Amino acid sequence: MVIGSAAGGGFDTYGRLVARHIGKHVPGEPQVVVQNMPGAGSMKSVEYISNVAPKDGLSMATFGRALVLAALLEGARTDASKLEWLGSVTSDTTT
Image (cartoon, rainbow, N blue to C red):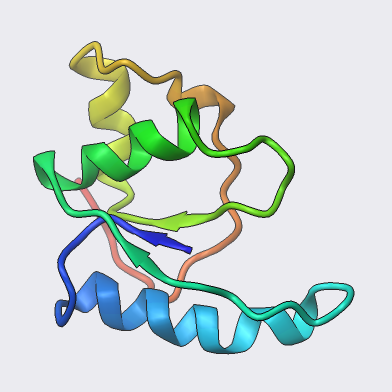
């Protein structure tokens, strides 16, 4: 689980909460290892998941929803349309 922010913040808390429990819902009940990857407003983690992490279905990340749209609008080095959305820990309305 790649967390696109520094340890101790809101996304870190949500990511660690998901990491603690999601393994119970995956075949084989794997242990999930958390790696914080702050930088460029979490864009570093999005680019890592999109361009570097193995495409074997075992890598996941947490970051703000608006970041995917920002990647599309600002010409980031990632194709946000290739990311899969697993779900959300919170519910909020973004405009």
